[in-house]
Length: 223
Image 1 (tube, one colour):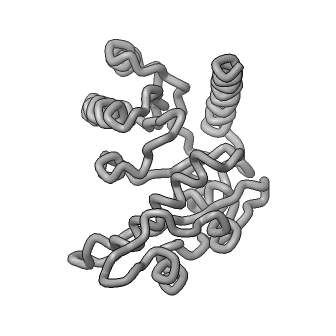
Image 2 (cartoon, helix red, strand yellow):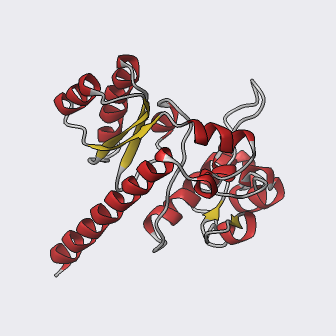
């Protein structure tokens, strides 16, 4: 299930990297160079869409063809856009990154307040999280948390391993057939409900509490 359908958006907006004329105009410079600070403050409004619950969705884009190069102007443009929405906008921003650690190597997640890793109920997934936590620290991301997904039952061993790594568990999403049925029907899980959705709502509440605490701490330091 992709993010658009999960949010109840019928069709993904065009990836921002598909707006090639805009990207080239704003990010490219003379002699094959590219700008590190292109204009990006209007991009989400121009290229994104708004879901039924008021959530704005924008698709960044990626390399579609093997051997197509580093996409330097596009990469510079997307990095500038991410810096803008993370550091300058007042909205809550969620980056739905591809599974794995490649985006950490590119530094595109630099500046986030919390990195949430979705962990499958297996030790290999936890081992990947160890690498994610190490790379996140290199980027200055101190808060790394985990969500255990498709959990068939209480995951004692996984929780113990995460505790050893000092990674808090935000919650556990149980294996839920209703979420699969929603995917097959092209519906948002929020419109179908079920144990999985209730677990996600609990995680949302915990995140709201966390961000509220972080905001108070930041205000206290600024005072």
